[in-house]
Length: 167
Image 1 (cartoon, rainbow, N blue to C red):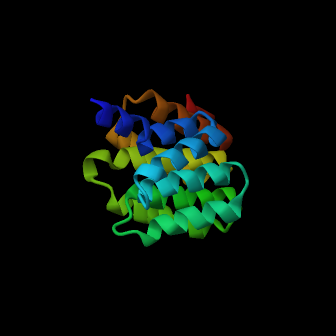
Image 2 (cartoon, helix red, strand yellow):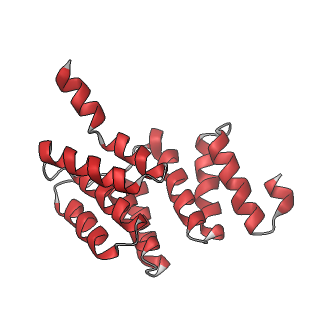
Image 3 (cartoon, one colour):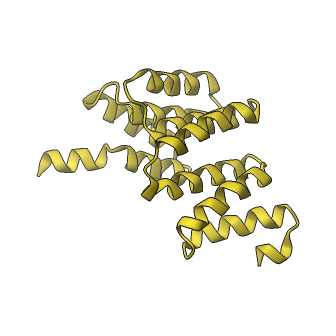
């Protein structure tokens, strides 16, 4: 029971939730704790890197996400986090797009919409509404009734002044 509880608390999913909630210092703290037990876990390294990127520490961020890529078999999450870090570091969009393409390629068909949603969300936050709309439309094909997908797609359309589509 104790081991299960520790794994749940120290899981990359928990840390990703903290990042989504804007709790970046807390995400770094929990990443550190998790990395003590699971050193060199690529998903944990990517989480920590993304949290640093959100805090505008791009040097630390890239060190962690690049370290995650050096581990065997980087997951879609690692590529997604690297793409987000590049967007936050104001790197050329093409660099982030390559990472996003790799994340989509590696994800299973069943869950691909989740990766596309997250990419669309990151692009929208970075001010790239047209690119975000493309990913969000693909995510919507997988989840036509998902409120978050529809909301973000509506926001993208609104920013593109496509008001009839946004409604």
